[in-house]
Length: 226
Image (cartoon, one colour):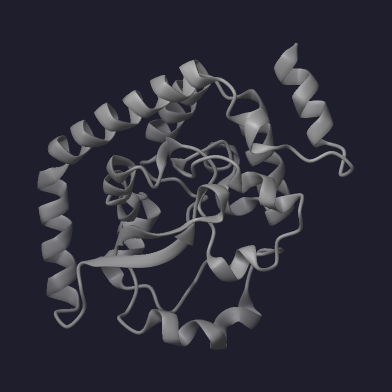
């Protein structure tokens, strides 16, 4: 009943959540952090052969570029950090972004383009299967991210946020979340924020486990990823 009551208040633009409200359950937060540490460290160990294989393929296709791509993202309470991914685009992808902004295929404060010309051949494969996201396990180890939570936005996206949108920054961002298992790129920005706030106001340890399980099921051949 308590979670439902909080969720109903979120629906009203007259009432915004506070950090104290959404982070009051210390027992859950400690359990979540333990799950994050164990899950991310185990994942890094088990997936190390895949990391090596992807690194080689990236270097073979584009020897001049780096294996990993790091980008400034906005985390909990507006703090900035470097988020890591396998590089899936050409080396000068960020420089070419401005010319592509007019071709954005989603509404709101984020950029998505299904046939982005900056994506490399190996990049198309690892993005389709979300393998490019695996280095974020290191962000989880560091505490910048959690296994489950809202996706961390770019600073330029946050600059366009309303007070309502900024509520998604009240918790630690995640590698996956309710948005990713509910439609991903087929959803617009407003729908993403709504799902993020639903997660924030109803999250539990078992809800996190359910989202993680759905994410694993979706990893292979998700048609919604781009």
